[in-house]
Length: 306
Image (cartoon, rainbow, N blue to C red; front, side, top):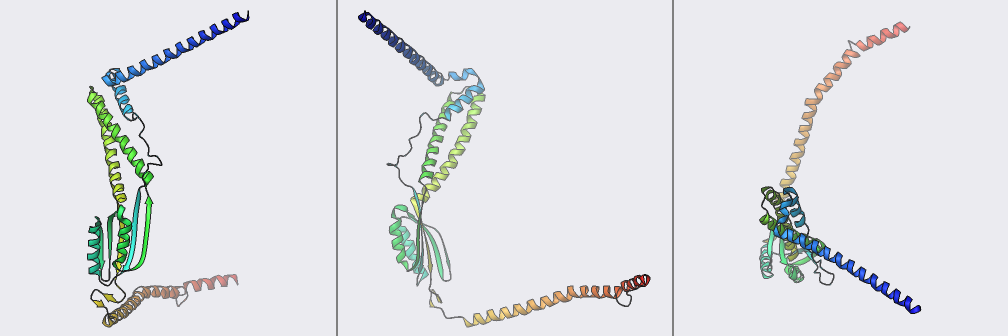
């Protein structure tokens, strides 16, 4: 009896397992067939037979989704992207020699001068130096004169750089897909819609590429700003004596300017103050003087009360 029960239970369990396996196989087969049909329809261009607007939209939407997510840089393989800047203030004995030294220094490091300016007792130069040689370049530049101040700072743009790089890759994939769909399109309306999307993606791609070029240049070339100044009371020829004549001329100019301003102020008072004073006197004469209109009115009002 017990053997019959065990045998019956085993048969039921085996039947259930076979049934579940059959259902799973049917589901996988149906899913595989559906996926194969979808890929075949898109590959052969059969999607265009279902309607102009729907097919064009499906092409654009399909292009907007990459086939596989782009691999993001891991913590172990990531390369830090830094924008480095340095500022130097030095005191020198000759601006001409300093400028020559800076130009030779920039060339020796494979960089270039971005901008420069010079005045009577100083000059300012902004140089671009390969980032890999930034530290040694800063150390050498400090020796151009007597160092007065030195400042170094770095900006981490790693996240910004890789985010922009990923978006650029995505846009390129979209553009490639859209061009493939355009080659398969047979309807004019489909072509117009896909070309419009291609123009939009191309414009975005060019703008993002410009941003990437500027960012890459800032990363690859560090900025070093050198401010060189001559000592006080010294010019390019040597010690500069105080110019007594210039000081006296400046004093005379300031005195003359003061008296001119004083005279103009008096003139304003005479021109604008005289009519105001005459108007006040006329008002007093009419109201309280000989004519005394208001004075007489007050006297009459007081007489009536009495």
